[in-house]
Figure 1: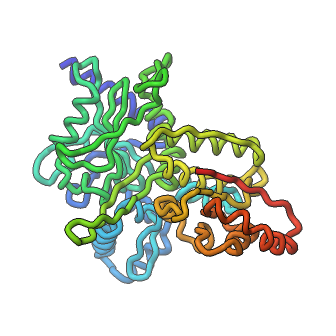
Figure 2: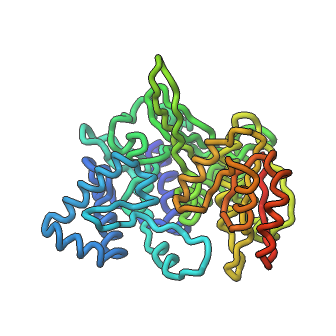
Figure 3: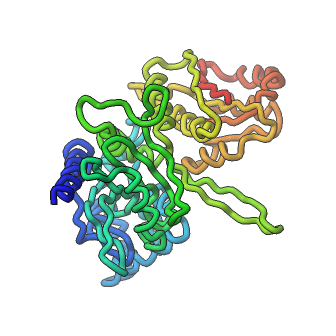
Length: 416
C-alpha cells in the first residue's frame, strides 16, 4: 500500500507544480474520449471561446450535427497530416478555417496575438484510461486545447522501481496501435521519468522502441546534477513543460523528419519525429537569451559530438535568432545566414526550418549564383542558407545592391 501512496505522491507533486506554476489546469480523465483520443470538453470550450464567429458560421451549415461533423473532419486531418501540423496550421471545414493552438508572438507589434495565446488551455490529466479494449491507463497526459501531445510514465525508486521499469512499461504494456499512441496522429513524445533521470521516445514500437536520454549531464558524464531543492529531474516539470517553454517546443523545435530510402528498387518514405534533447534545447535558448541581451557583434562556439544532432540544433537556432526583437520591437538581426561547406546544401537543414515557417521569402537557399546571395542579403530574407564558396564572388553584386540602402544591417552568421 505504501508503494501506491509513494507513486501517487510523486504524481501529485508534478501535477500540482504544473497547475500552480506551469500555466496548466487540471484535466478530467472522464472527459477523455477513447474512440477519438481527444478531450472533447476542453476542445469545444477552446474553439467556441476563441473562434465564436467562425463556429457560428459552421453551425449554420451543419446544424445540430455540427460537433459530430467537426470531429469527423478533425479526425481526418489528424490522420492525414498529423498532430503537429494540425496544431501549427489549423484545419479547414467547409471553407471555415479553425486554429487549434495559438503560439506566442515573437514581438509585441500585435497585442491581439498575445491575447489569443493567453486563451490556450493546457491540461495535465492523471490516470487516463485510453483503451477501447480494456481499462489500461497512462500516468499522466499533457494536452493543448483538448489535443493530446505528450504522455509520462512515472516511477519512484523508493518503491523499488525506476526509469527502466517505465521504459519497459512503454515497450510491453503500451500498444502502439492504440490511437493515443499512434505515431504522429496523436501524442508526439513519451517521457519515462523517475526522480533521478529521464528518457524519451517519439515512437512506440513495442520491443523495438528506441529511447534517448533527456538529462542535463553531470561532471562531463551522464545523469543529472544534485538538486538541493528537490528531485534531480524537477527541471522537466519546473522548466521544460511550463506553458511558455512547452508551447515554444511545439511551435519551434519539434519537427517531422522525412527521408527517402531505396529497398529492392522501391523508394520508401521514412518518417521520424524529432524532439530536442536537453543539451540542444538548452544551448539554443541560452544563445538566444545572450544574443537578445548583447545584440550583434559577439562570437560563440557550440561544441557538438558526432551524432548529437548538429544540423537540427543549427536549424532551431537560426529560427529562434530570426525571431528575436528588442524592447522596442526592432529585430536584433536583419537576416540569419547559415553557412555550410557542403556544395550540396544541407537538405535536412532546409526541411527543418521550412516546417516551422511556410511563408514565402522567410527561408531561401542560395543554390544559383553569387547574385542570388547578394539579393538575399540586401532584401531582408529572414534566413539564408548558403555555401562558403559563394561569398568571394558576391562582392560586386553586393556593392551594387547596397547603393540603394541607407541603413546599417545586422547579420547573424552560423557556420557549420
